[in-house]
Image (tube, rainbow, N blue to C red; front, side):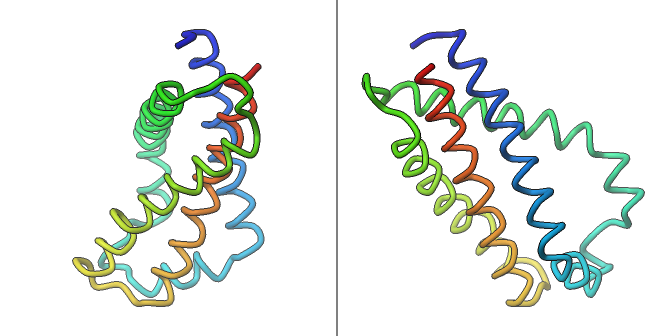
Length: 137
């Protein structure tokens, strides 16, 4: 494992995660509208923004952990395609372990859960792509 490449891929994955998330919310504003149907579950915007530093730190740590997992299985020649496959697998894990879990345990509708599932899958696939490209560098 290469610590410099792990750090670079972690930061790149972090940037990819938030870039993809921003793009999704920009392209699919219905997700925000759907979430507003559940005020007992979701905080108001100001409450979310006040906690954004915590989210960003936790996301960076999570992406660092995922980057380490990628590095453990890394073989010379891996790159974008392998990163996308890896990110898609992480995306499936997140959707099944987080989104579906929340759908079962929280009073949220299936429409929002499908939207979140697609969003998280895309975000984590983008993270994997970034890791694949940057870890190879």
